[in-house]
Length: 295
Ligand code: RIB
Ligand code: NA
Image (cartoon, rainbow, N blue to C red; front, side, top):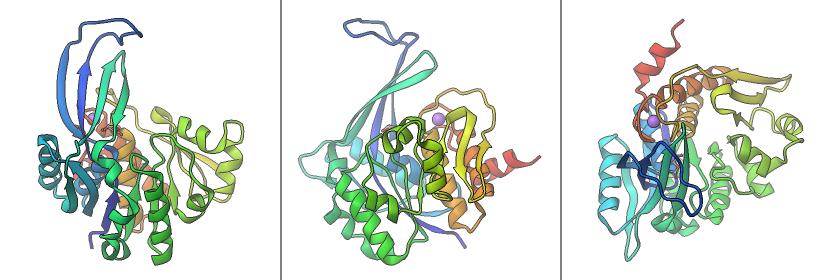
């Protein structure tokens, strides 16, 4: 049976400039191309999970603008249920202003309607959350919402995966209540402090998964610290790789796969995602990931 996954989070339009050079402060450079593509960490995770075969519900807000309509249509086109995606009056959709240059991205996020994904707002979806196999959340929504989601999920015994991106300290009680937390190296430093990372992995064994990009993902399985290596690929655009990793991990875990297998599945999906332009561009189908995992 398909697992039911609810994603609480942001949905935005990504405004992407491709350029050979990233401008310094005060500098102007000529870019190569401009594209608008759907993004936002929440929506990205929802789309990735749907492509991997889960039954996915997005809980989010869009603006009262054309981006909002495009964002919602895109979710639907990818098979994501949008019953809990609402336009907010007099508000603009979230936007992410991305510069793709010198083989990497830099991003400014303007949250817009995503700030309306409040504790009260997610309560409208309480029944859905209660009946989900797993819930996902990230940090492009207010901190109170993350706190409330953690409370609700722990009350109902539903596993919650917190992707603590962008970086922001996570309250102790949230850390205690979540089932999985997946910072990248920078976010892990903000959460646990650099030198203490090995200690944090041990304390939060089977819960804390530190993603190290092209290197893979680090965790502690109760006996030892392990690095599950990622798959080498030629990257076109790494935007959304983390979202694909989180979604694939969530789908695998919700299906009852073991930790090691789920992490390999997630690494494979993430590595495929970077081969296409845009956050959702390379996000793979279930078949593509399974094909990619064959020896
Ligand atoms: O994780 C990638 C996403 O982060 C992009 O789609 C962009 O919206 C930013 O918020
Ligand atoms: Na991509």
